[in-house]
Image (tube, rainbow, N blue to C red):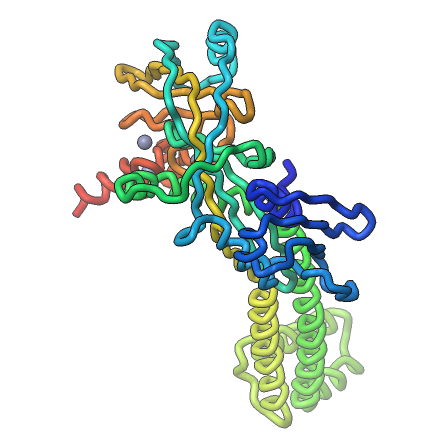
Length: 417
Ligand SMILES: [Zn+2]
Ligand SMILES: [Zn+2]
Ligand SMILES: [Zn+2]
């Protein structure tokens, strides 16, 4: 899946507001002929060129990347107060019979069945969000994620189509509606978080890889230092035990083969005693304390180094909506009756006139569209595999839209109290 580049999103927004554009394929800049009101709002000449990278000579072109004034002013095009606008989309009437068949084939639940009920033509609306994300670690990644969310059933689609063939109608939402679409906003947010994570999967993998590599290097480096210091410790300790060792040496010179074995055993005893004393730090003597201090320093330094690395590669992702367009349209809603054990639930399935496809099922917990889907026991939520959790303690599967911890384990804990 490919998300739109910033220049593509800006081109969409400008076209949507009546500008005429042409792209210079050589340097990627955009030639813009903007209507007077747009030029006034954006504070740009009616005829201008936008560029998207720093390293070009500023020959009267306008810099338009994420950190530009132009980009910030772009938000003003989305109505005076919020960055919200409303558009309409022509309805498209598909063949209902074909669609019914498609629904029966395409929609499946891993642990439930459904029956297709009545269908109706309805006025429905979608929200098209443009989310901007910035992922910050030792490197920076940023991009725009367009998401289309269906207000009827909160089905979400990473949206690759432009908003260019939409007719803008009015700018404001009524207050009541604002309240109602709060849930739609929250769902879109929730989905965007996971989709951005997926989009950044390679980046995150490379971060992990580099972190692990650097941690290994730190362990190797300090491991060697520590080994060397321990070797020096043992050498010193053996020197301190010289009188004992000399005695053994003397005995060796006059020993029979039987006593020789006994001497070897004694030698080994001294060796392991010293090693144990070093390990337990019970050995005292000339210069040994300094070496023990050195080991402490090595260990502390290694700890700091690891903490530094973890901080260096920590990933911070910020996501914010840049603009929202509500798209009103008319389409067909199919009702399905989901059956799980003895319960059932009606759920609307929608045909999307923009993509001319049936909207995917939503996961009603994370809203990230991903098969396979399950249906929960209690409230018959539709949830993805990730949100149908298996309890690590008792193995029970539970819906995280219903419970934030395993209900079986919670009950057991409560009754034990
Ligand atoms: Zn989910
Ligand atoms: Zn459990
Ligand atoms: Zn549930």
